[in-house]
Length: 468
Image (cartoon, rainbow, N blue to C red):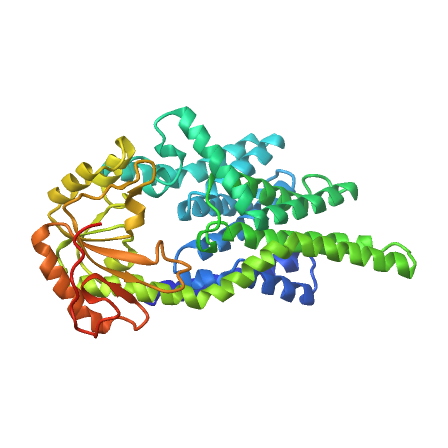
């Protein structure tokens, strides 16, 4: 249970070590390095990601190393001394794409820069290092009856579209949504681009290692904004925020001495300082707001997971160990209990995924799939199974909604309310009794509906809800 927390603490510490090494290599003074590392901690934001318990901190560590190794690799002529750096860089590209598929964006950008330098061999090797983990994973998926790409990508992207036209429309919509919701990342990109132009004006060539690092960050970020996700739990773009903060900090340290290095009177100096201060504040304000918001939400998010997901997992482990349970948020339940899980979102159940990709889920399809799996109960976000166009639920009509749990101040869970369904009608009395028995073990601020409404004394059973 503690492994994700310990690993994320370790990787976060390594991020600070890696950033210190990078900043020192560019000649930054200790006070600059301290300020940049504080910014990396709170703007990424590392505290939120540590408690998130997922792979995004490792991804952030590897992208920092990959960007600055590649920038150095691109910025130096091709010779025999580059062989060792080539091996390290290819290993970082492989690892980055193996951790998360967004690593492909960086690999494509790096390959393009190498091709522009006419270093075809290195561009091809970089492409091979990026595609190798995807091919290995894809072969494994196919051998086990899944599509080549993970269902997390297929169902959440334009890959699920039936036609090229629909896929292009979905991609354009994704990019539009990201560019409107990712202003914090866009401002960081624009600031880096501005400083890149300043460096070019100072006769720093486009392949200077600092300029190469800026290009790698900017182009990778733009590709991510066009094709991937933004915003949910701060994690999808966290790797870009961290490396962007480091790149921009180095660019500022490189540019600012030249700005203030010319002879000027006091008024000119104050005007320049004021102009730079206002520009920097406007550019970074969305990022600072995001960091402050993440700290404010951290405690609430941990409570949300404990009060909803952990309680559902405890309930299932106590009453339905070994049974088939239908879910749409499967992590905690599968971690804490041993069940036959039917994922009605489709990420972990092939039958559901195939139905969603073919013609979409319908009440008949859900009834068939749950029947074949001998499903006893379902614990779902009911709103996720509501067809807005048809104005109706896609859950089978004979399912009995027995009870609900609602958490306050939800900031991280998919919905604030989970509904407990008896998939087969004769399971309803047993489910109602289990919910009644478990009610005394729920946190006090979890509002219960159905058989054990919060307004009733603990252990008192209210009437079961029998229709939606």
